[in-house]
Length: 312
Image: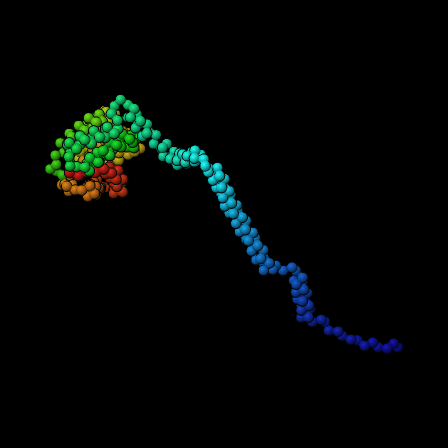
């Protein structure tokens, strides 16, 4: 009878020990992977930035060196060569001032036409106008300067819009005498015709009708006129917009005309030129303001027509 074998029982392996083994193997695999060294990345970036800054510095140094080489070459070239120096100066002058010269060909051509024409020269026109003005208004230098500015504008800059003068009149001033004197001055020295439009006492509200009336007056003499528009403070509604069109550099049809615009109020009496301009501005804004013409629409009109103002 064969001997009995002893049965032995081996317990199953603990699950926790298996898990710990798996974790240790996972750590080994992770440790075997290459790690990114942040320090190395930062160093590489720093190296790249240093290279870029060095490249920029080299470029800047190249520009400086090129400038010094060019300066030395020019110095050697221009040294002891006065004619070359003069030519360079003239070239620089032409480069700087040629846009200014070419910007106003009409003015220059017009001036030369006056000088070459058989008629009086420009300086003779201004001198004669000034002398005759002093005979009529011997003690009003500012008014003379205003009128000479208007004459100079239509002679030298005929395409820059009509010369516009706004006059503030007190009610007791002899306006008819002033009107006749100015008409004679412009007729004698510029061969200009006198035209006059008096705005009705009941006012002028239709801007289209007002514009056509003024155009007919100016068109009858091809713009060669000193036009008196009396009582612009009586304009109503949108009619004041016509004045801006008449004096605008681009929109005006007859840019060679002289516009004398008048407003009447006792507040204008004996004002100096600064108070006169301020008083006329405020007076027109107050008078023209309405539901159909707001202040922001009035300001451009007033600023356009009050560049030259006189009060009597």
